[in-house]
Amino acid sequence: MCGMSEIAQLAATVFRKAAGRDRFLVAIAGAPGSGKSTLAEQLTELLKEAPAALVPMDGFHYDNRVIDERGLGKRKGAPETFDFEGLQAMLGRLRTGGADIAVPVFDRAADLARASASIVAAQDRIVIVEGNYLLLDEAPWRGLKDAFDLTIFLDVPRGVLAHRLVQRWLDHGLPEAQARERAFSNDMTNAERVIAARLEPDIIIRGES
Image 1 (cartoon, helix red, strand yellow):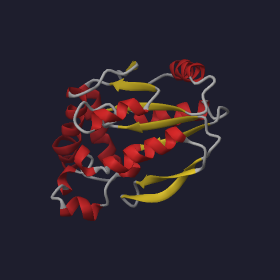
Image 2 (cartoon, helix red, strand yellow):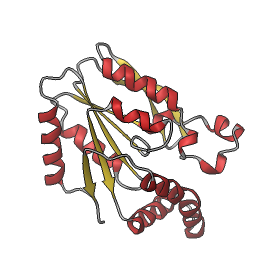
Image 3 (cartoon, one colour):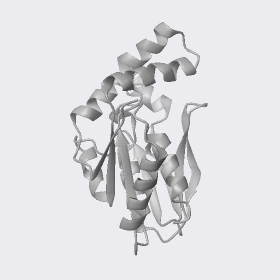
Image 4 (cartoon, helix red, strand yellow):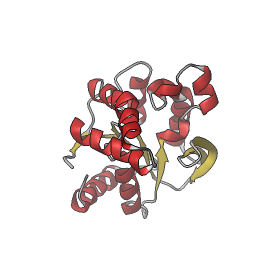
């Protein structure tokens, strides 16, 4: 996990690069369990005077019904379970700016995406987008990189990812056997895909714990 001094330095870099821009888009990508959400939230908070807004990619999950109809129930969280075209269109709108834009947000407690659950205001100069597949080097995902002005990748060792992902399911109340099964049958499969097919980011942040 990044220390606050490192996050402060990253915020300073983003602020400097965004100087003079009406809208500056930042991608924070990494495998499941890499700490993207935490970093994105902390970075947005440090840049709130810019002002800045946060858009998690998880809001573009297909509904469970759609995922099940496509036979992907056991693969939720894989690239195929996201509305790529919707995300791509939203990034285009965010880049253009000029008006308040409603974005979807994933409700983890309800296990579904809620439409128009957050607003990126017209005056939000910096928009931070975080998600597993923003730098995925697979069609059609590789086309997203051009939407961003700055790209960041969290590089975390596989063993650390596995530990965090098992702990995530334990925290959701699953017994250890089920937590490990969920982590290794799906989450780590997605993590390996992110690691194996990654476009080169502008900044790499390495995490060890």
